[in-house]
Image 1 (spheres, rainbow, N blue to C red):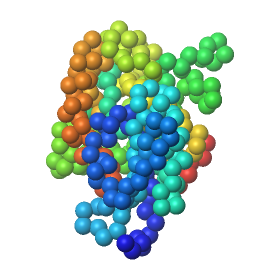
Image 2 (cartoon, one colour):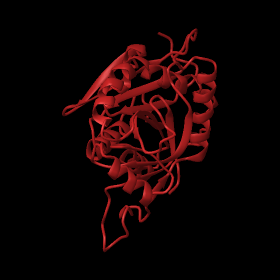
Image 3 (cartoon, rainbow, N blue to C red):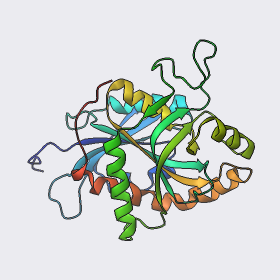
Length: 267
């Protein structure tokens, strides 16, 4: 095969579970695998429909649940090269529990801020402050949030991103606990005004990318209400989500040419 007339961007795509990856790997050409213990990273070429050359290089992995697993996978993914190109940006997608009663299954939350709700280094630091960063919240890159919000809303309005609901931006809280108690959500919402959703990986991925000075974007789909029925709703939702997760990922890939690319970030 001829070399492409340009050097495609290399996107790192990370999820916690294979169901959140969906059929992404099946849509990559010329895939290769690398293994780091039990972590598998698949890299390949993604062709936009009708294209003669790869539109993007994609490296895909799923981390497993929790902040440590997510941080480990993000670090390995950011060190991945494909066609001699390093990762330009890391996308993390997957499901989350709603912390806001206006959010329902299939709604999408793109965080403009993330916090680790189980971080507590008192009395040396205030609650939620990440010692390595000396700050409570990790702010997403505004231009990327705006780009993704517009791209997904536009795709939904054209019925190209089926099953998905409204798109919101706001605060997401990450912690090593599956939230299935309304009392816990009520406490977190009181302590963290504006909280939209809870999950177990996002802020860890954001911290790694932030400290490595690589842009990142996190997109979460509501699977449950993070209440007493969360476990069953989550299991049922995941079966359906696996069928449609590629639609959301493909939307981001198809719109990447309009992305606000600015290279490495400064901290």
